[in-house]
Amino acid sequence: MKFSEITSDDWVELQPYLDTCLIPYTALTGRESPYEAVIALERLRDFLDYVEIPFKGRVVTYPAVHYSQASQLQHLNELCSHLKAGGFKYVIVMTADEALVQADLFEADLVLSLAAFSIGKKESEHTTENELKRDIQSQIYQMWN
Image 1 (cartoon, rainbow, N blue to C red):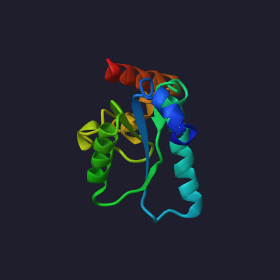
Image 2 (image 1 turned 90 degrees about the vertical axis):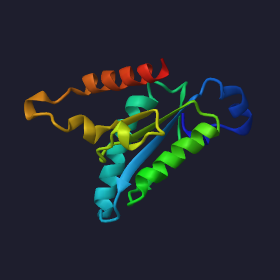
Image 3 (image 1 turned 120 degrees about the vertical axis):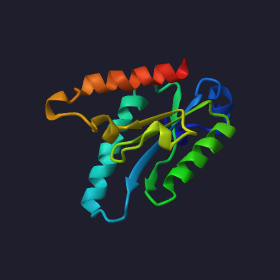
């Protein structure tokens, strides 16, 4: 569920069920051409579907953090902390192009990085899309338990 779909009245009723916040992180540098920026946004959108669709009744997707900067990890950690202080029990950061790992974002409960999933894999070891979706869903269920 997108943040913009929730009214103030809805939030009071839905908050106990919508306990997980999803922060999309595009990691644009500003050096991308308009065409490259569109491709990066589409890649992130498609990756977000792995969580947004199966967990629609429990996850709220917040506005994306688009641009990467030197202090970005600190900013993302602070954002996760603020969202938890605001009532979310869990915060997930998702990125398609930045190879983030959990240790980078200690305030996030889960970091899902498409780029990190492919690091260290040989050409013949690529995970199928369905295997990747199952792995992501498994990580989310583990976080909730």
